[in-house]
Amino acid sequence: MKKLFIVGLLLSLLVGREDPFELKMTPKGSPHSVEGEISKPLESLDVSLPSTTRILKEVKFVYQKIDGSIEEKSVPINSDIDWHYPITISQIGDESVIEEKKPVSYKVGEFEFIIKAKTIRIYSPFRLVQNFVLPKPFRIILDLNRSEKNINQVFNLKGRFFSNISLGTHQDFYRVTLTLDGQYGYNIEQDEKGYIIVLK
Image 1 (tube, rainbow, N blue to C red):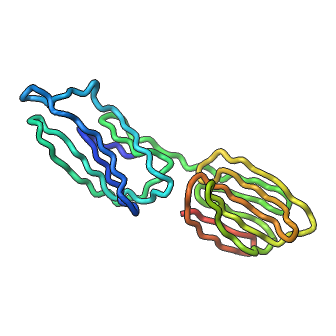
Image 2 (cartoon, one colour):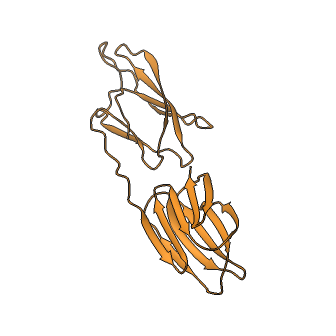
Image 3 (cartoon, rainbow, N blue to C red):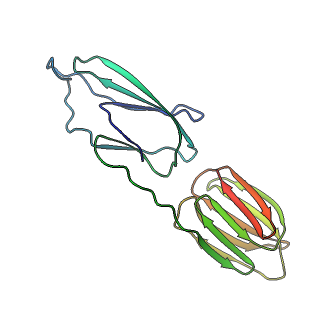
């Protein structure tokens, strides 16, 4: 999480489109302070961004000075972010440490799925016929040649990125469905042991 010190706030996110957030203060009668006194000081404000967010381009602060005039300050960021975690604007607090999760494994029949963060490895002897995506919820579909054995299994996951893995048997192929928690691009690679999918 990022901790930023502010009096007022306007976040401008330039990831394909503008997505501004603004915190305003109104003037106050005293010549030494602003009008319309806020009920309590700012301690922490969380801003959640869409699942399509990858890079935070800029933060813009709009603040009211003691004389009532308005000024702005823009801070270039240009950093990758994980949209699962809100951007926190705060005047207090320490940075939290995000621990990387260990790989988790799921096995059924001649398939094994090993997940770590944005990567899933699929151990399988079957040839990939096609892969494509379906929206709402966002799913990656892999169709593979099948054996005579029927395999039907669903794994409901608790981590980020991958929400669900289902494996079903169709007439001529097995279908692996990877349900994701948001919209992602992905790369798929094949090696002698199976397939590796990396979300991006």
